[in-house]
Image (cartoon, rainbow, N blue to C red):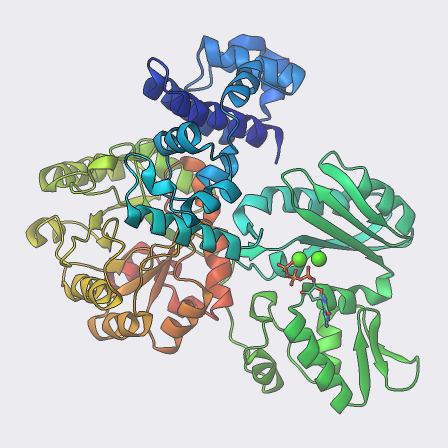
Amino acid sequence: MGKNEQLAKALRDIGFLTEVEDAENAQFKSKAYYRAADSVENLSADVADIYKKGGVAALLEIPGIGKAIGEKIVEFINKGAIHHLEELKKQIPVDVDQMSSIEGIGPKTVKAIYKKLGVTDLASLESAAKEGRLKTVPGISAKKEQDILKKIEFAKKSGGRRIIGEVWPLAKGIESRLQELDGVLSAALVGSARRMKETVGDLDFLVAAKDAGSVMDFFTKMQEVEEVKGRGPAKAFVRLEGGIDADVLVVPEESWGSALLYFTGSKDHNVELRKVAIDKKLRLNEWGLFEAGTEKMVAGRTEEQVYRALGLQWIPPEMRENTGEIQLAAKNRIPGLVEYGSLKGDLQVHSNSTDGTATIEEMARAAKEFGLDYIALTDHTKSLAMAGGLDGGELLEQAHEIAELNDRLDGFRVLASAEVNIMKDGSLDIPNNVLDKLDIVGAAIHSNFNLPKEEQTARLAKAAENPSVDIIFHPTGRLINRREGYPVDIERLVQVARDTGTVLEIDAHYNRLDLKDEYVRLAVENGVKLVIDSDAHHPVHFAFLQFGIGQARRGWAKPSDVLNTLSADRLLKAIK
Ligand code: DGT
Ligand code: CA
Ligand code: CA
Ligand code: ZN
């Protein structure tokens, strides 16, 4: 975590504990902390630098930061801790991270179970639930107790794997500092992160350099290092702040390609490649590709050379899971995958008319800055009261506002759209005659997650069959490591999407990434069209698109499978 993220986390912890404490005006105060945390997290400059340059006055110019919070930020910058937070933690010694990792346990519940049962973390929560004590707390039914147990099981299964987007800035930051280090010829983030897996167990870095010692010194002394777990002449193993482990290996230049191949994995891909090597009387390891029984090196400097010497086409890292890609490469039939940076538009973008944080114009300008040509403005609809959803009249008013905005925007277009709420029975909360006046329509489920699979699938199918619905947004509703998603028969949904010409979305938000890779592949194999959307609620969120593209590539999607690689005009012709 960078400084801004650490501060944002501290502010969020204060917000959470303030709600748990439930003192006067707790709701109001905690909201202010959450808002300040969002602001800090989305700053483009380091908060300590802002303070150094402009003092408290500069901090107070950050939206959502007033005098009281400003003072706490100064404390954090100067002392690395906030006294008020330490006090709150003493009073309410619950593990905020653990307790808030279980969906459906809010501050009120945390308070009740702490006061009555002394529950402070997942372990004590689990025993309370298993022993049936949880349901003795007012407001917790026997069903909720079972539900919480299931969620704890799910959290345990994730086994400490980290969501890729959460560790990405840290990982890419280290990668670029390694690349710039004196004496380094090449450096790369490898392992599952290079394969863009939705979660990563640890971070792996590979470096080609003549002098491994100086790389070891740098790596083990980086500011993010919390503990050096091991250090050899060319290998080191550390724990970084935020609790993720990282490895580094330094190799000579002539082994760069084979080591890159080895440490990118996956392990199953490597094992299969070694078999290919053996069949060709070759031996493959991280140091190179050699003639069997001799030390004669056949290839190793680049990945392409190693693959070629094995009789294979180069394989994109996202495909290296040994699910058929090696056979394709042998036949020279690796598809051209959708490329990073190739999206022309983003079809799920929110504004502050509902739960977004910026105006339509601010989102449009940010998208343009990011390099897009168009966005679809998809605010929530009326039955999502929590987000202040819009009704039909308000949507049409917004469409009018968008038309005016488009006149002012040069070389950029906002499409009038909505994220229409799918009701329990599969109907929509906005009539078709309103939807048909919008440029494009996405529909999504935001409630009744616990319907049986049949019913949930029928609900989605009914929405897809609606002639006004172009896209099904985030089709499984999962939150990685937090919520399993509603049960849905994906094969059936893919068939319905194909039969009705409905598009399925890959929600690029790194917490969601549904469709996940294997479902993307199923959609692609069945000729169902996809879109990749950021689900942006803030101008900086367009950067999420890369994670959606990563999943699309893991599902072998080509540009022709992804409709927002098209211009706005061609996209609008391609939808139903
Ligand atoms: P992770 O960290 O669990 O998300 O997954 P990876 O793929 O990053 O795995 P990791 O960090 O254990 O190792 C990095 C790469 O090193 C892995 O993708 C392939 C290679 N590797 C590790 N252990 C073995 C092994 O026992 N055999 C082979 N062939 N390759 C291995
Ligand atoms: Ca790894
Ligand atoms: Ca590793
Ligand atoms: Zn949504």
